Length: 515
Image (cartoon, helix red, strand yellow):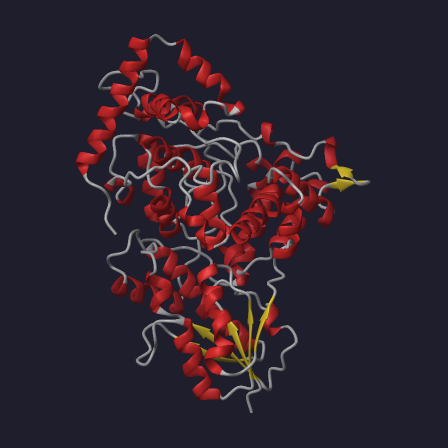
């Protein structure tokens, strides 16, 4: 007899997920579902779909090995429906459960489905809190309610106190909460740079790769040399490798970019964290242990911990606090389409070619490539923030809406007008030149603002400030660039804006990217 139908979603690949925690394997059927709606509501990168489906199939085997009965629906099953709700309805017909238990969804649209099931199916539905996160929705809302400004740094400090990570007698280790200023060194090519582990696809993954190649041929990205971990054991191997070989230099070169180097000293663990194969708090404690043992410096470990218990938790809190209409915010009124080469990487701007090219190849780019190259450019040209959001959601393997949307629309595109970030993240080519070797390999000259060889970022930067002076001119963090703009002669300002306008016209003439 089936008493409980326990539903496990594709980003809940944690063996002790809340929906299973007190269930009896003898009277519980675990339902896992691959459904068409989840693979096509945006055109997800082929590699992203392959990773999620393969990880799900391997997780189902791990659950069976642990004694659970798993009812697994594959995408190409003959009778498969397109939706979670359709598959739950079919599973109820097969198992006649007394109740449904599920862990809360990470995204608004999926949560709405879960909340409809009790009425639709006429049986109790227990939606449990996802306690893999440090801050519940209520806890974050209470923190935010008491503040005029939702600065991530203050939330991060509370999470440090709550977890006791990198604390000493109630004070931050090293006497400071944040070592970000020490994590901005440019890198040089290094033959000894660590390379993440690569995992050869097994039979399950090979089957998934064939399915994805056939069914999603029109989606962006490549499946060539697919090497992601798809099991908790292999994700753990990748984590162990990172802590030993890459974490010590991660802090210094956290913001660096190099041509041809996809990973540098980054962990490449976010897909495994966001899908549930790795425990984020456990990773933070292990990073701290590396510091305590003298194997990694404080700036590296603090930077890593901040990304997880600060940035990641904060983005989730903003997403759920602001509601499903957050995606519609467009403070700067931007409406331009992304250029077509965001889907090909074929541009003479070397920095964008590198960041987009590796994204299409691997579904990965690190945070500075996303924020200060692809995101910076999209903001400077005035791209529609909702369209930029969809691009990021499509192309990155670790992109789930709860973490990607506020990061893109709020932090990268300033679409919320400063709720999340105190200023737009824009720069001329000088920042990219300082943090990378990209500009030395580019056909454009990063030191020129005007002329056929001028770096497009330069004129676009000043044009962006001029276009939005009514909304941004009083922002204290932009006071210096606005003073510098005002000091330029009218002729120089006109020439700069004409250069930007000509470049934007050339983008529009090349045609927008299609969906």
